[in-house]
Amino acid sequence: MTDTQWETYEVFHQSKRGEAHEHVGSVHAPDAQVALQYARDQFARRLKCVSIWVVRTSDITATDYQDESFFSQSTDKSYRDPKTFGAPDHL
Amino acid sequence: MTTPTIESLLLAMADDELVLGHRNAEWTGHSPILEEDIAFSNIAQDEIGHALIWYTAYEKLAGRSPDQMAFERPWNEFTCARFVTYPKGDFAYTVVRQFFFDVAEEVRLRSFLASSSEVLRSSAAKILKEEAYHRLHTQGLVERLGDATEESRRRMQAGVTAAYAQALGLFEALPDEAVLVAGGVMTPNIELARSWIEAVAPVLRSVSLTPPVALTADAGGRRKKHLPDLEQLVTDLQSVYRLVPGGAW
Image 1 (tube, helix red, strand yellow):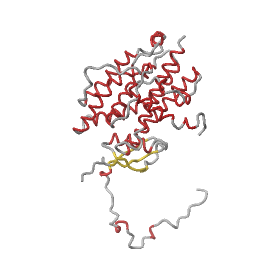
Image 2 (cartoon, rainbow over the protein chains, first blue to last red; image 1 turned 30 degrees about the horizontal axis):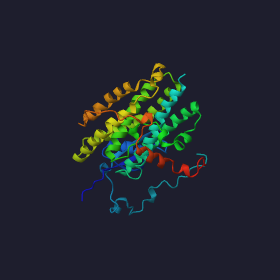
Image 3 (cartoon, rainbow over the protein chains, first blue to last red; image 1 turned 45 degrees about the horizontal axis):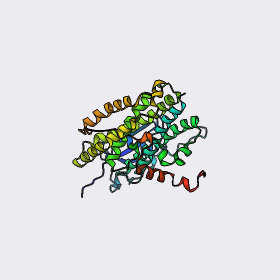
Image 4 (cartoon, each protein chain N blue to C red; image 1 turned 120 degrees about the vertical axis):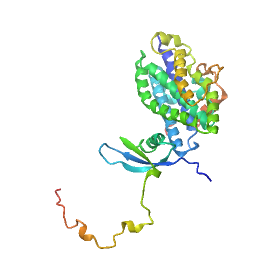
């Protein structure tokens, strides 16, 4: 059976200039311009928003959950952590 | 004294917005795609918000509140165009109708920016900001669906054929329009209709949709000559309010 759904776009929302765009969800859309409109209606009507990015989901290259060793810390690397530096309270 | 006449203009616009907003809200939960459902429901709510702006302006002159006008008036006292009263049809018809309405609103509101009436100038400026996005949305749908598949083409053409003459009914002259035109309050509806025809033509042409050749504007609504579709809609619209008239919710 063919998939009759439009493809999905991931939506990134920025609440203030200079802040990072945060991933807030995804929308189905026939193209990027429509994706922006749908993203606005779904994610920007109640949140304060100054900018939205949409990215075609299929354009994202991601790690595979099966490939756990990609993130594994098999040897002790604790000496690399800056955990002995205490931050003074007044900072 | 032009006040009663400007009241009828405000009311005609308010009724158009309320009734079309209600018709469009009938798609909530039934649109072809979830995202479109949310977007279209949004537009429906916006139109009802515009109705509130015009009813509130009307109240300042005539003393009857928006609730009274929307919920206590008999259906055959509404002065909306017939165009907005027709059942929602399929989604193609709905899209074409909303696009035609968006262009009509834009044409009318732009003409109000030069009106001698302050309430028309300021309300138009406020509503135009939102309308630009309605048009972006509905024109985008017309351009995409008009030119997508054989089925979408066929349905969109059927929508244009059905809605075109209906839309011209939006420009039916108001009973005392000459007074408003003479007072610099509004541009004659016949001129607005011409601007509307010129504005929708290139969009339709770009996707080879054609307006019907022989047509008569589907007028009557401004003179309260309505079809049973409006009775059904208003009965539905007022059903909750009528359970406890004047009640606070």
